[in-house]
Image (cartoon, rainbow, N blue to C red; front, top):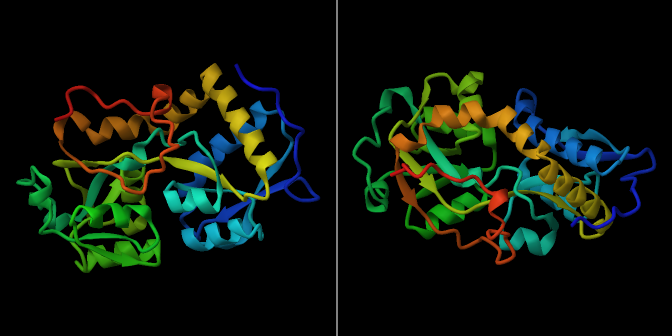
Length: 279
């Protein structure tokens, strides 16, 4: 049973919640998370409005600003032990764990690079590209997979084109939009392999703003209970999951040493359930 809602908050004097602005052309990356956040506020009966920060921010800069309660009120990001120590998470995975289901972006000239990859050992000769502050970088390295990093999301695509690394693992709910973006020209989704590790994308708040986190959490719980969370998820990602052809892929399972012990893995309704036919 849901608890009663706390008093509604105002993130600033004008009743605005500030979130990190994406770089020009990358606004599509925020559409789903903002829709779920707005849904949570609506379910909580909140009149708070969502507005982007004045300047665009890469992930770590946004998390630092949020930690110090400067210019930002919310960030959504993949969780880790370190991030949950610094910030206040709402432990309901926006992505239903699908940020841990990864398909490789490849140059179109190397589309069959992974055709003979069946195991982790088969994957180790290839180098992945990742953000320098992404938890995924540490997860891959923990398994002996070589990683080259960049501080810029956009530069990773240029580095892949230039073959500075071999593949760019992307979640099954990101990769198709990225391929349709201009920077995705002459790139393809690998058709053979699926990397999987337990992961969750959460809304994070400053530890100085527990009431705001509580309002969003209770709104999300209401959306889960009445089915509106799932409807929004399917609206955005049902087609992406069909395109991923999960049952046709070789799955390579990885552990996630950064996953906090408080992750609600026991709440099965919060997580994507893979088709039983996935190899």
